[in-house]
Image (cartoon, one colour):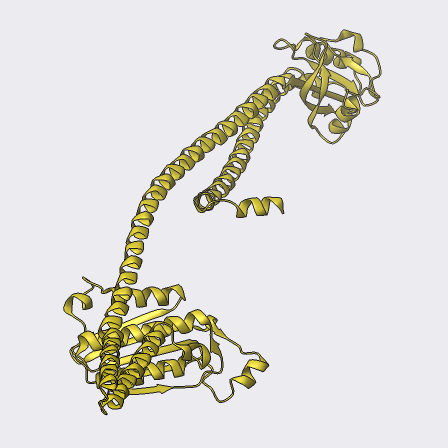
Amino acid sequence: MARFFTLRRLSYGQKLFLLATLPLILAVSAIALMVAQQSRALAEREIATLEQRLLDAKKQELRNYVTQARNGFYATYNSAPYNSEEAQTKVLQILAAMIYGDEGFFFVYTFDGTNLVSPRQTDMINQTWWDLTDSEGTPVVQEFIETARQGGGWVEHLWPKPSTGEEERMLTYVTSLPQWQWAIGTGVFIDDVLDTVAASQTEMRQRVRRTFLYIGAITLIALMGVFASGMVINIRERRLADAKLKRLTQRVFDAQEEERGRVARELHDGISQLLVGVRYALDAAKRRMAAGDPRAGETLDKGMQSLGDAIQEVRRISRDLRPGALDDLGLGPAIKTLVEDFGSRTGIQTAFSTVVFRNRLDKDSKIALYRIAQEALTNIERHSGATKIEVDVRGTRTGARLHIADNGHGLSAEVREGRSTGLGLRNMQERVEQLDGTLDIRSGPKGTEITAFVPLSHLLEPNRDEARQDKGKDST
């Protein structure tokens, strides 16, 4: 759990680096394991093949020795009478003399385990070795005799090396002379084969280790490349973000100044003029009352009327800044009032339609859609030259939609081609994007259509008390 919260405290750049490097590390680790496994399996097959080839060479060598021995005593054995001692002695002499190499020799055992020939270990001759076993527990002599009884074959065992007296691995070929119940054979020590196999295994392990090192080096270089590219991208993105933040801040300042200028103009052109008129009316009424002029009451009435107009203008400006109907009645009535005031003020023909929502928009969505409608009507009044507008707000199965259409001459070519975007259009776009919605603007010579859409996630289910209070009202 502590690691989880530590991970959550990582910066965005660190999380991005971790996201980029973790799959790389996992993939490289999996590849390294697969390569190591495949390399080890291939090497083991090659070593097994090498070992088999070496053993086959040893076996072929033993067959040659046995063939030579048979050629030496075959005529004597076949022509001798049954259990001829003379023939047996001659064959034993032939086998005892067949010593080859540094360690090679022939041996003869009777089927009861008595040794008859052992030229390199003469102390074994004429003794029974039926129970002789090597250090691994293999009954060597019994294996010789059993193999000979079955017609001949190979026996692998440990045997004291004549030159050192220490046990080494030996491969022996045993055959029989059934007429005399003898087991004869010869063997070769295969320690050189085992050394070669061990050296090959060591080399294989070194190759696998080198492969891991190569893969690790490549992975490290790749990680350094990812880190370097991430740093470059991070610096570049940070510079872009700073530039965007500066532009956004400037646009906020511009929007504030524009709104302040609009409010200042309305105060100066509307309320200020009305209040000046009220002051002149009150001064005139005062002078006439002092002079006993009966028209003082008429002048005072005009001042009162101008004061009422000023109060209405204050209410209009206040409603434009923050319409009370938006909080009290909902989005539909607020936009309807906005459209009606727009028609009364500009003389443009207006048409408003809405469908009562089953759900309610949250506060941010209501404000955003209202400001979009307000901005769109302002643009229509200033730039479109339209004589008719249509406004529709309704809820759908996927969200809330505001549609505004006019019959004006449309947006300028620069705006349609994307070369220039007014501050009002940018504000509308940003308001919708903050709500994960969409803003579609279509414009041509016959008019402009603006459609703002807010997703269903911003529609809230009313509770029972609010539903009873809002009964009969637009629940948007």
